[in-house]
Length: 474
Ligand SMILES: [Zn+2]
Image (tube, rainbow, N blue to C red; front, side, top):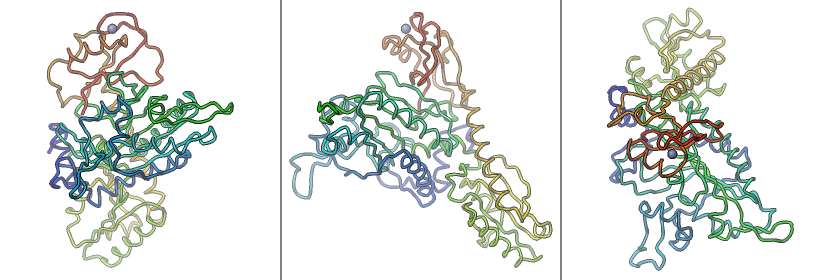
């Protein structure tokens, strides 16, 4: 299957062929994580944990079920999730007195507890996170990692004394995001969502969007400022220095297995996955090239190199199965191992190991006596190349338009990537809705923290300094 010709089919095929998940589980949108896929996901989680722990967040684990009474406290929030939640209404033979919601996200599970935990300004800031599964009843076509009904989810929740402190938290979240996305080689846009598209209950939402190869954008995460929108209904208050009781200002930051979906879509090619080295279960795969000449020395050298690499912190696997090297190449290319190392009798004579890069297909040799330094250098270069490649796709995907006539008409041509529109918008919902209804494009939002961008609104022609991005979404 060719990625360029039919991205959708290519994606669906590759996630299973590469061994990331099994879609045959008998509930639509709930797939089985297979060992290789789960390993990649937990590597991604490990970077999330590293960054959250380093910034003073504590990891927690809240119950999956939320009483209806708590779930219904914040009105906007309910409206946003009502159509998507799963309910538990029976236990054994009995109807439950209070029906339980299976968490679609954890605000309504956590905030009743926050109101017990927070007493004084000394309890703030409160910064916690969890990595758990959430459930949303998707009615659209499901797709592995991208649109599922059971979602592997990271969410951080914070409480602060003031709106400004909460704003500083948003800045910290963005720094955390930059570090994680760098490991995944995923460039992205940070866009403040429109009022009609923000998270239900939020004061504002920053969407994190990455450009997929079919010209659509994929939201890989979001950051929200809640102000006191939740702390009022959930009664989360603290006593300040003057003994006055005030409501806490809150933020959240969430990302999910969509990160893996983006990695598959953005980096993969017709041969299969290409995993960025930081999240590859095996960064280097060592394959012996056995011939009549010195087979034992070759086997020993392969074991030794695997051992040296593993001991220097490079996750390496010796593939000494009794199969043709060609079949092994094919398999590891499909599974996206960043680097293949081959060792044969001739390599031993020359004091080298041969390598093949998964990202560029480039082949070469590394001196045996500097094999770990040489491998490390190649892995770093693979990361840099993957990022640069994705970045150039993102940059070239943006088209500036100044008139509605410039908007591509009809169905989205998924073989083209230059489908992210940038334009001036006065910010009014009237013009926003008019634009969306007449073009079929969705306004993703305005760049977070951007400079003024003077121009004329694409719909009403009024002078404005607001820049908006629009696209078709996954
Ligand atoms: Zn306008």
